[in-house]
Each structure stands twice: as structure tokens, then as C-alpha cells.
Image 1 (tube, rainbow, N blue to C red):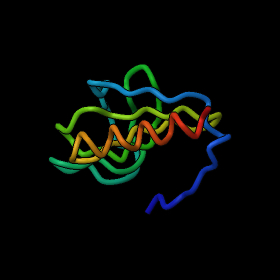
Image 2 (image 1 turned 30 degrees about the vertical axis):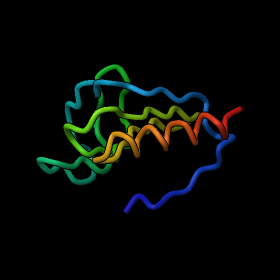
Image 3 (image 1 turned 135 degrees about the vertical axis):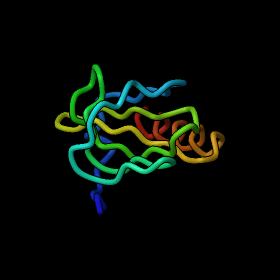
Image 4 (image 1 turned 180 degrees about the vertical axis):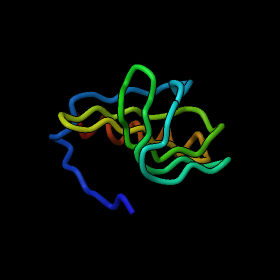
Length: 91
């Protein structure tokens, strides 16, 4: 489910966020107490693809031409590693 792949050159911007914006509606996917995976409406961002472990800050926001993605890991250090890897690939 949602096993898409994207190239680094499709990324417009990347941001590391301490707080996830308000998620208002699940449009397609799974919304469990500890996990959100799928399409959700996010305040200020519109329909976005979430791969979120709830309550595990920080969160990575990836903006692409036709897609917005929020992702993190249960382990905040792993999320930081992913963010650094993405930033390095963007340079």
C-alpha cells in the first residue's frame, strides 16, 4: 500500500517540523491510535500522504510538484538521519 517511489529531483522542498499540523480527515488509508498511513487532509497543506508514527516528533515534510508527504519514525534519531540524507541529496 502506497509503495510508490520518487526521484530526488522531484522534491521541491524539505522541512523538519517539531509539530505535525492538524490532521482533519482521513480520505484513504489507515488511521490507528499510533499510526497514520495514507491520504489525509492536513490543515494548511491540503490532501497529503502520511507515514506517521503518532507522538514521535520530529516530522519530515516533503513537498513535490504534485504531492505533499509527511513521514517520521518511532525513533527521533532515525527521523533526523532520514532528514540529513534527504538534505544531502538535494545539494
